[in-house]
Length: 166
Image (cartoon, rainbow, N blue to C red):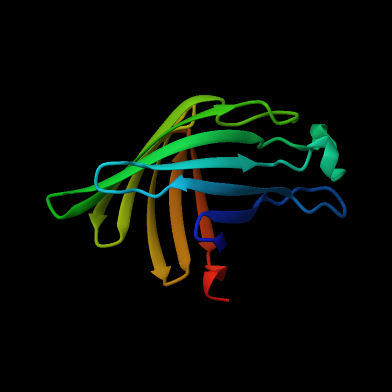
């Protein structure tokens, strides 16, 4: 959800768990855009995910957090042969209190439009390579299928909306 023109938030249910009364692995995060992309300059975004364990928030213990990340990402798009290409390069730290962290170190991704609004995704998340396809089904619904770690199939159905007009 776009909270402001420079900030967005997200909430995800990663997978159901098998514990009685459990809600499944979940994650939430915030991203703040410091610079919007221009013709010469890439966009610069600061993001954090699973920040619930920050002691001052009094929400959850750090042992409950397994997707924590604090990162800075630079993104640039361009066109090549009438196809859109997006590149992302970032660096993450493990400064957030958590059981495990993600995106610690240098990571990056490339998205290449293969057909109209169908993108081939290639990324390295500091630990493994991932490959996928993403498309938008309706104006606010996105479908992604991926080969996680080049070993396991994964998929994602997401809805997104912008609160800016409210």
